[in-house]
Image (cartoon, rainbow, N blue to C red; front, side, top):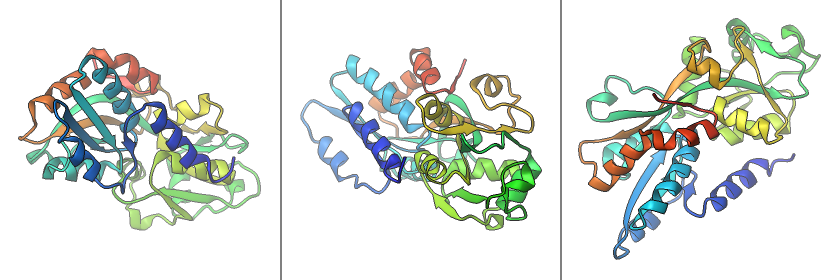
Length: 286
């Protein structure tokens, strides 16, 4: 695959669902226009690119039984979801991590699923397992050749997530590093951008949502999920708590949530979407 992999995947993803999954940077003016449509109430969600595909599928299902409701789902990162929900730009925010104590003062989180963050490599990379110290060495450039961690004699290309991405925060917390400690060759945003980097250059290492990685691998994308600290990344190891890098997938609201948004939020936290949660390789909330 070439460099068109990511954008084509995102485009086809949005079109196939026949409504909006806009990736960060698009104006909210379209959402404002739709709110003026007679007889239609619009609910806007922004935030985590990990959570967005699941919420988009749930929104499609909800709209089928609520024809007077239109739901727009926009990604852009967990920081955007927090900011937009807190300022009222969006009705709800999508956040793929736990809230901080400060964030919890003004926003309430509702967990809709659980996920893990896994390291990914090109399927042709012979390395199958990396422990925490090896990952620290790779991301701080103490290890610069794959041969030092059991791979081929080739340079390690480090892909890191951009600031504001909760996947970055969760991964760095596991490593015990600050972002300033990381020496990245590539800085990317969306999960699919990371996957594209690994597909385009087999010497690249990156990290993404287990759900996203498992889905892409099943669909034939040439990546593999790397065993971490001796544990295979999977729905099962996230569910039983043995995988070392796990996180909640949340939708957040402020005190001014509308009745329509509250009703959709109740739907998102109900068993009505458990099959969709599993379809995206996440773990349902009991």
